[in-house]
Length: 362
Image (cartoon, rainbow, N blue to C red; front, side):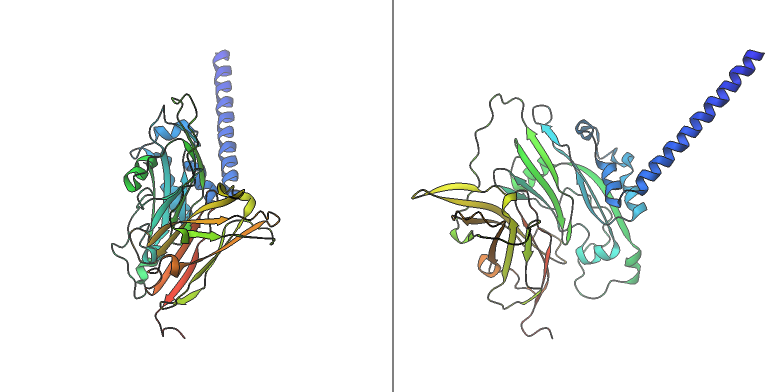
């Protein structure tokens, strides 16, 4: 009987200790989450060891409770994740998790995620912009864009959120005809004035015994897309930066987009052009979206900046694009436009320009 009492007492003590440990663990987790940003909380829910991504499907992704976290924190934006390394000899797919959440007002002005694009840059110089098909549609609040008039009052209380997993390799092939092979990629999603986090992905194929020969960098035939880069000593350049006029007229004959970037962050491709000179080229991709447009971007254009000077004293590269010359039909319709520029490992923040009819305005 004494042994029974003793064992019972030990069991009670053990249960109390386990209960205390559970409480402490939950409290520590709560404290950790309290010290995290909303973005960090969501990213923790969608980031895993590489092998785990292949175990997640559209049927079981809800078990991650990502959508619940998006609703709980009322997070608005796009966040993405993918394995850090993919071996095509073991898996032919590239799993990619995307979250998208927005309130009714955002949905009213941008038609939900209808303008979303996935931008992939490759070390070969190619930059790919896919159609909007790999982030979750969530709950589409409006079936058509509403360009005129103010949103009704009930819209303000709407909120849509979702998380999905896709095979980005399949999506890119279906949308662009490009088959992602061994290479290093940087991936970013944009949706009007929203930009997701950027992720890096290494794709290899262990079946290939010898490394692939270097693929020549993408070259563009149109000489007017080659832009002179001036290397100037400026203040410390933090990233790829754009400058556009805040407002223009639909009849303006010139619309200048000014670009600056840190020269040390991009390794240019070099071509011999004779007389012991080399042409240095840097590929970019220009993306232009229009508010209330619920399909592909108005323009998705490769642009090459080129220079052949040897002046490396400056730390900032500067060049200009006349959007009227590059795409004469761009920015001719009144409205609000969103402009991005993507580089190999740089991505600009959005620049917004308002286009007014001739004679419109103050």
